[in-house]
Image: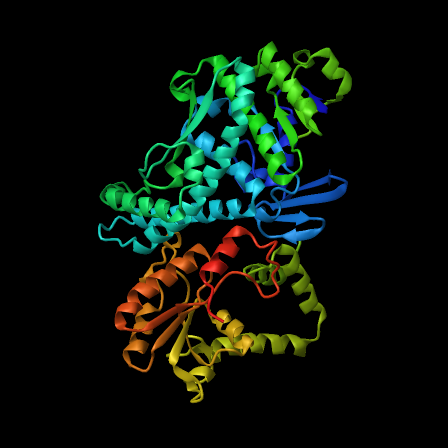
Length: 345
Length: 198
């Protein structure tokens, strides 16, 4: 366990972000690739030496100021992010994750997709192909001519969208399975459940049921829905149907967390979700993830801090940032390597 | 200003080339400056000549120096089959396999609304004109397996099937020698969908 301590705005989070960029080609912040490169510099470079089991893994990332990026695995250049993701699995926990309960559907979709892309190259490929289809189809709808013909784009959206959705549902059902006991412990006996609210009809069903649905059924439902909203889509120039508009609803004791969760429940849910992520990574990749915790201790009360501490100690390695070591229990500080961070930016 | 003006101008032109960044441009420029005048003249002449001599084959829209390209002019080629590709370089790739004896049609891109490319911007009209002559019975769609290539293939199928043609898509999926265990689900799924009888 390594704790990075230092005042705000000094670059502690940048360090954690560099780890997420090189290991999973993503960030817990809103970002675009050109922004990764320091103003006025030509190149940003990250190198990461890790060990998986006993096997050394060396990851690399070069980003040019244009945003062009190359990944490296053990010195070999890789073109796609999906070739790198999952080599050194990480789970991040940042203050924004507290939005998992109350935030919009996008927060939960993003959390699932980042995890899924680490777990399976197929998930990552489907995610990026699907994103491309939505951008292309939306560009066509924006061209605005009422008769603009989207037949082919509807077809590929339903096809790829159905595969993507089922992958997502499979992952969500694993998260649900793992989150239930964690949340029950944290909340002292409360029950959490998940439901998919899809943008393309079909009933609101738990993830495990959608995970078992046939691709043909989902594809058919998406096609039907596209037909229903076709007029509205043309008028508004937006793609209204598909996995990019779905929501994974969290229920606590049968009530929507988005509507009703208290501050405490939100925090417990976010923490339980992260624990569930780590467990699913372990089960799928057979290797416990590195935990990256950005300034979350300050967001939690004593009880949840203790739970987080236990969680951190259960993993092989954790990098934490904080502005104040007083948030950590003395026993934890004894075991941790503490690094005082001066301005690293 | 580090460079004399003529060198700067050369660098600027070189950097416009695909895959050439500032460093490669500098390397090429210094190589030219060091090499003998005849070599450079040959390079310049070659550049000018391709632009002067090469034009699109009016039939398949591949690059050619003759009236028709070598493939279209070859009476031995099977005129009943046309293979539709995105770019001239795809013709080269398929020719290299030595396994195809039909004709080609180069679309000049793929449908991509984000880049403002629709069917009207591609050579679809010209393909239909070629087919209207009546000799073609099969169209093999060999656009790339990207989202845009797939969508373009679906579009062509919708245009061509009503004309009573056989429209086929090249199988995509496992590369030759690909290890099944490591192929991801998407590729494997596509390979399964595109399976054929042996």
